[in-house]
Length: 98
Image (cartoon, rainbow, N blue to C red; front, side, top):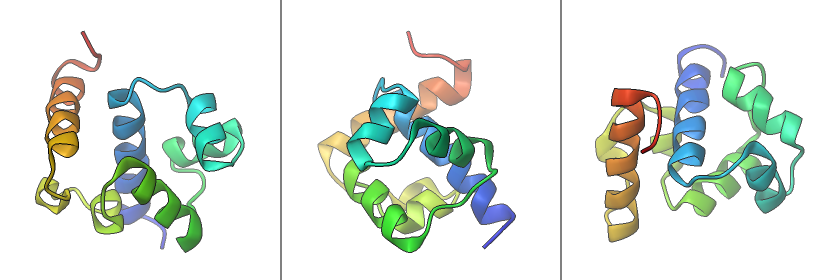
């Protein structure tokens, strides 16, 4: 599973982490992996196994499909995700959170 899905996952993970105002270390601790593991995921150098993908999707309350796709409609519908979607648009548009 290398290539387009890996690049999409790397982008999604970083967007979700930044929108949640978390450091790589904080996310790593929350899902029980190393900070370097998160960094490698975000750089597209590594790809998580299905167990870690599931843990990440549950942590951020998104589907695995959302993590692997560029289709924003794959978000689970709830208030938390609408807030995250708003933050992701801000990050995508400006490259930073205000």
